[in-house]
Image 1 (tube, helix red, strand yellow):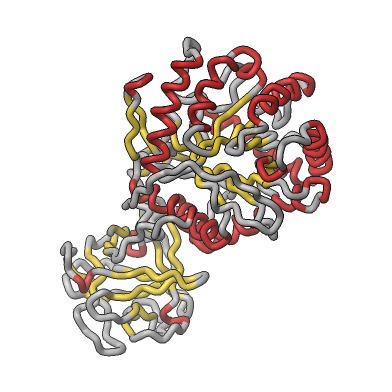
Image 2: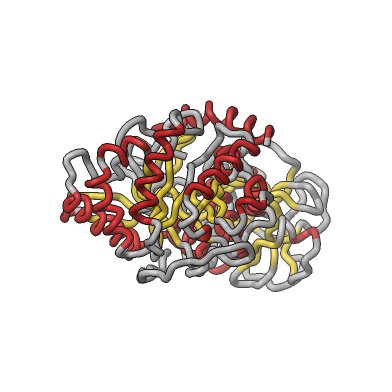
Length: 489
């Protein structure tokens, strides 16, 4: 999901899908990893990565310069840049893997300099060398494509930290043609251990089974990508995103690496909607939040490695870090601590940075949902003026499969629809029953959410009542601001 190529990728997505149818952060310290020997049935969780990308995006018909590198770099100066960039990416995020782009012009004319950056990165951890076809989802010249790989393999096949991603997002191929390309590549380079070869799924790397079911490609790794742009309209629950990623991976989690996934880490706009910095510790604030939380949770559950897009790309609002300075003076700063916490959660190295409690504020009334301090089953939830630190206004959103339950910090009771199906009826509170009356679905609407009860089908509604102590109501679905709520830690 690269900002500079959004229109190009949106157009190409249709072609790729057609081809597929044919076929709060805890910072970890990075260490140099042992070589992986991934094979069918093993885990890929040892690959904890970030992408280092060209500011122009990696779909470039020319030499690639990951952010910080340039045309005047020598082997020595490129190594200096990589020491700064990769070293800080690893120390800030806890990654042990960096994914770097290659293409024919880069290897043909810049290789003597670019290897300085690759060698420096390899001294720190794993490097995935991923080929980008600049257009059409396939190489424009097969001979030049293999000449490029001949050079790369000759230099790095013997390095246990070097991984080879044959082609990024191969949407120009049918499933059969793609598998034949992969088989030709593997036959041409038998000295490359299959556990260090990554074969993207068909289309935009969205179908692991198309690769995994071909016995000729056994024991290789499978690359999967997933972004919010791949689903239109985007899902609005964590569970939907988790299931979506699980469907792409299928039964091949033991071989799969999610080599691209990402979401906004800085403020920005998409489809006419502006987003401030998103706090990914708070569930359900928008569809990006649902995506990051749902997919990071699924990656952790499946035990798959992942490579965030991007760890560094100048000017990209998805970038996990921001760069200042140049050469030996390059300094990276973390862009979004809550986003990093979810990335580390996906890797299985962090707790997710989830906010323990959230406050629910109504868009129309400006009041917050309040438990009132009552511990009696059936007590009515109210709305009161928002007060920071008030335990009666602090709620835990508990993911419960395809629904959530919302529990008050002070009373321990859960918001409950009470089986009331009449518009204007009050939302109650009840001790833990796990009934449908305590199951809610949170859907995103811009910067706010709507909350609907599973049993009653009614939405939590502010009822337009601005008096402190007013009942928290329920009403059938509408576009009213009374049904729009903001969630903040």
